[in-house]
Image (spheres, helix red, strand yellow):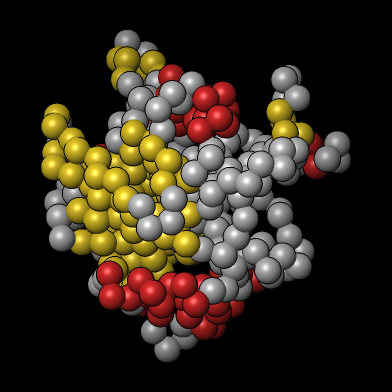
Length: 295
């Protein structure tokens, strides 16, 4: 860790501009790792926000854990106003207390003060105690099969967003606690369209159960950290198979190329995904940090 502290974090290869995204459609942008910014007909959703230079255990003056390789495509203060934060589970590379606290606190840019805090937070069961450390007082905790509807009445974010949790194959304990916590994938529905956020999962037949709930415009799927953690993280080929089983049109590959969490080379997950979809490459929604896809 001491040697790695000297390494510079490189800039994201693509700088997105959410102000140019259409509000009458669905745009999905990869910010880094499992952090995805979704513009869903004017509603801004942020998944598993992690914006710090490291993930891991807080030591007060810093964080002990893996260092980021590529900077987030957008900094916290560059985000649009966030309506919903979607948290898959309590692992430190998905539920980052520091990022959540800063997101909630908002920011000031010169003379213009803009709140990006106080969004609706949807999370897995038995994770509210962790979120309280970030000042999140009333998150909506969902078990598998449970759903909630978030209503919007102001600005461009009008109407409703339906969110349903579904079962994936992972685990939810947050070190050093042994408390068993939830771990979810999610279905998002709005304006007659639906997308999947797979969270973190190993290969499972459970995605086939979702097919009748579609069609899904896209499946945001993890494709990295599988070697040697194959029992908890799927391979790129398995991610394709699960997205196909669910009936997703596009695959948005995440959980890769940001933190060193496993033994496979950084470039391998994307190379294997491209090979798995060699006959239909148009299904790959994006490839680089900061890229976006309209679905």
